[in-house]
Amino acid sequence: MIDLQHITVNFADSLHPVSAVKDVSLKIETGEIFGIVGTSGAGKSTLLRTINLLQRPTSGRVIIGETDITDYDGENLRKMRLQMGMIFQQFNLIHTKTVFDNVAFTLKAAGVSKPEIKERVPKLLEVVGLADKTGFYPGQLSGGQKQRVGIARALANNPKILLCDEPTSALDSETTNSILELLKDINRKTGITMVLITHEMTVVKEICDRVAVMNQAVVVEENTVFNIFANPKADFTKLLIQHSNNFSLPERLLAQLKGKVLKILYRGGGAEEPVISDTAQKYAVAVNILHGQIEYISDSPLGVLLVNINGAPAMVEEAIRYIKSRVESVEVVYG
Amino acid sequence: MDSVYILEIVADLTKAFGETFYMIAISLTLSVLIGVPLGLLLYVTDNGLFAKNRFVNILSGLAVNVTRSTPFVILLVLVLPLTQRLLGTTIGPIAASVPLSIAAIAFYARLVQSSLLEVDKGVIEAAISMGASPRMIIVDVLLSEGLPGLLRGLTITAVSLIGYSAMAGIVGGGGVGDLAIRFGYYRYQTDVMVITVVVLVILVQVVQTFGDLFARKFDRL
Image 1 (spheres, each protein chain N blue to C red):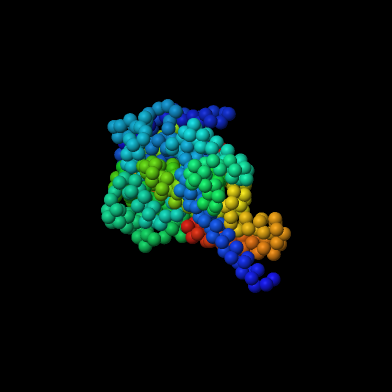
Image 2: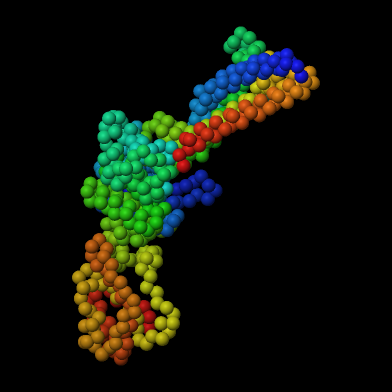
């Protein structure tokens, strides 16, 4: 659906020319929710904005469907943008216009007739759960409601693509969840392709199918969300995931421990088997669970356990080998 | 003070008030009709979002600056030939409206530009991302979002015009300010001067109050 080929964006207007995006290539499939994650300043927002050419790439091609749009301008560009919706961190609603007029704006841009606008706007507001707020001004709405108006506005012309620029970063966690639910729901019902940028791994975990991790203007890793969490490869990705799964143990505990500490990763069906108790029965080792969690990402379970294993060194080695054979991965993190 | 004297002052004041009203109404109308488009031109030609044009921007900016940096008393005299060509006379409130309008247009154009610059770039960008035409962006985003600022700027312009119009007396424009200078200053009739100043203070207060009221009404915060 979206094919970004070797996108580079340089900002040359300052004394120090900066590459915001360096040679990034991504393919985003029809109907998926694709995340771009990274810390602020990583270039993810700039990259997103090249998709509808709010930001023109310095080099590289932007291909939507089968069409290379990189050199579009004027009317062509306008027509193309009608097929893409965009929502923003700060909502960017016209605050001197009512909720109705904000949504009507997009339809008007597409040349929809007045009677049809009158008919379609209430339906769109219905979809986002704001049917009763038609005559309100944005200033009278909460952040979550403003984003809902933003979503209704972005979807008004039934676009094929929805670009989401940190859509939940200005919202509290409860509102974030409800907005993500809404986006997921819209994606399922309409099959719209979504590209979402965020700095929060929790958002990625919640909603995305695939994700690209960006750091310092380049994509360091790209995979399904499950694999990114289960098996992060790039150091930067590992760092991001560590932030969202904090498994650090208190110093005091580590100092008193005998034996080794293992980090065991289960995935899929493995998470449902009694590996730990099997190990304890089979080998003369003591296994003690220190920390752990099982999460469901894209409906498959992903478990992480920190265990302390203690016994005769040879036994411990064998036990570790046995655990390794049963689970996704085992890492000795201490001892 | 006898009653005839008071009646005289009232008659003079009423006439002067009418003249001031005339001058301000004409120049304020023209500053909206021409100053808003000019301010928009200054904004869009300077702005990377659309229609950036350095040449037009520098040229229109220069025209505005030249007008604004010319002291109003000088401008008043400077445009006399133009007034003569346009209206066939250089005397009276309508003739005085010509330099007043020129000054007001330039003044308001800058205020329009600066209140457009206050419009959130994100909102403009959102409109662009939805495929809105430049016309829609100007009408439905820039002018709509800028409206409270435009109204505040118009209030400032009106108040400045009341001040400028006092100088219109030099070319026989009349008005309240002119009355204050002629009677109060040249003829040492301090009482007349005080009365006219009080009237001017009230006038400015009224303009400012209504201006703020409208601006707040359209600022849907």
